[in-house]
Length: 450
Image (tube, rainbow, N blue to C red):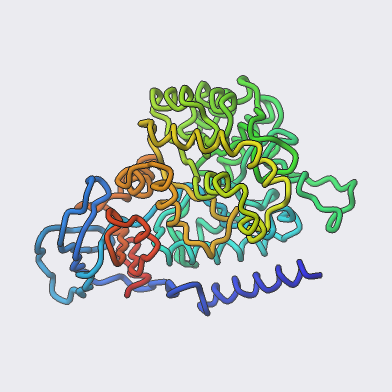
C-alpha cells in the first residue's frame, strides 16, 4: 500500500509538470513564437574546446544559431540584450547516458508501472534536465519493455509538445535471456504470480533473433542500438564480470546495426565483455568501470569512446562502508554486495582511466539515482577521480557531441546551434560551478535566466 501511495504521489507531481505547475528550480517553459535576435553579454566564455576560458565576449544569436562572436558584435534592430556579465557562459551540457523512465525507488519493481506512468516520469525528467543546463541527452534504455515510450517522448520534444532537451534514444537494451536487460528477474511476488511470464521485446538469443530485434528497434525509431554485453550491479540475477553474448552474437548485433546506419553501444563492465564488444566494432563502451589498463589501451587504439558514469558507480565503490549513504540510497541488498565485491577493482580502473588517453564522454546514469540530484555532479566526480578539469568539461560538451555525431552542438562558434548555458563562478577554478546553472538556451530559445 505504501508503494502504491508513493507511485501515485510521484505521478501527480509529474502530471503537474506536464501542465506547467511547480518544478524543481525555475520552471522551463515552451516557446511558441520565433525568438527575436539576441545578444548575450558574457562576462567569461568557454567555447567547449579551449583548455581555459576565453574572457569577456558578446554573442549574437539569430534564427536559433550563433551568428557572431567577439569582444563586441553588431546589434540588430529590436534585438534583446541578455546581461550575463557576472556569469561564465559555456555550451549547453550533453548527457549521453540517462534513463528518463526509471526512478531508483522503482528499480526492483519497474515492471509493475504502466507505460503511461513511465511516460509521465519521462516528461518530469526532461524538464529537470533542461532546467539544469542539459540541452541534449541520450536515453539508453526505456523501462517500457513492451512499447516505445522514449521514442514517443523524443518526437514530442521535437514537435514542441513538451519541453525538454534534444533527445536521442536507444529504445531498449537488447539482452540475452537472464542477462542484464531481462526484466523478468525484477518481477515481485507482491505484484505478479511466481509463474507469470511476460513478453519483452528486447530479449534475443542467438544470431537470428538478435538480427530481428535490431531491425525492429531501428524500424521503431532507434537512434542507437544498446545491448547488454555483461551483467550489472543493479540487476539481481547476474554479475558485472559475466559476459552475456558470444563473439558471434555480438558480431551479428553490431554488424546489423551498422548496415542500418546505427552505432552500437554496449553496457559492459568486465574485460571479456568489453573485449568482445571492441572486436565487434562498437562506437562506445557504457560504464567500462572494471576495464584493465590493457583494455583501456585497446580502446584508445581503436578510438572507441567510454561513458564511465562515475557518480553512479565509482562514488558507490568509494562509499562502500558508509552505512548512512547506503541506507539513504535505498538500494536492494544485492547491489551493495556486488559493489563490495568489486570496490577495489572499480577504484583501480578509475585511476587507470584518468591516466589514459581514451575519449571520455559525459554520462550520468540518472534514473538509477534520483533526478532530484543535479546530473552536473558527474563533472565534479570525474575531477575527484583524477580526470583533468578541461577533459571533464569537454566530456560533457564537445566530446559528447562528437560521440553522438552531432556537429552543430557542443561548441560555441559561428554557425553552431545556440545551445548555451551560464553559471555564476568559473568551472575551471571550481568545477562544481556547473551545478549552479541559472541560464539555459536551446536552439536560441531561452528557457531559464537569472
